[in-house]
Amino acid sequence: MYYTKVAPEVMKIILLLTGKTSEKNITGGVDLYSERIKKYFPFEILIIPDLKNTRSMPIQEQKNREGVKMLESFKTDDYIVILDENGKEFTTLGFAGWLEKAFLLPKKRIVFVIGGPWGFSEEVYKRADIRLSLSKMTFSHQIIRLLFLEQLYRVFTVIKGDPYHHQ
Image (cartoon, rainbow, N blue to C red; front, side, top):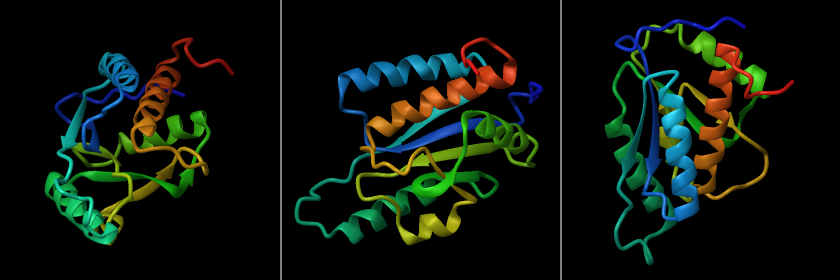
């Protein structure tokens, strides 16, 4: 694989999250991998605030309200990748190849989206350009943040040819 050179002003990677990461151990890992990724590529985490008073709110209403906030965060020329257990699965090397091709898209941002505990609204599914699965297993929306960022960092080391990934 060849390291794709993309000018920072041309493309950026965004990770869009619903709610803050509440587990201190996960937060430390998220911060660590975020800083590592930034050494390779322009990267930013955007957080949609948690919904208030959701105890008696129906699940579908929660998904719809979060969906509205997600859609408001997207720009018209964003390439939207939602992390969904029913999405396309890649090996690490396959993900690296896919990401290199995505860098060639005429987009300014690739936005990876991790939904809340109930997933995504139908409108967000419709807006997504691709669904990506990290596993067929179910993980909390908190832990998947760390798993995804480690994988994104690993992919950049593969693309760059750094020794982090052993294969």
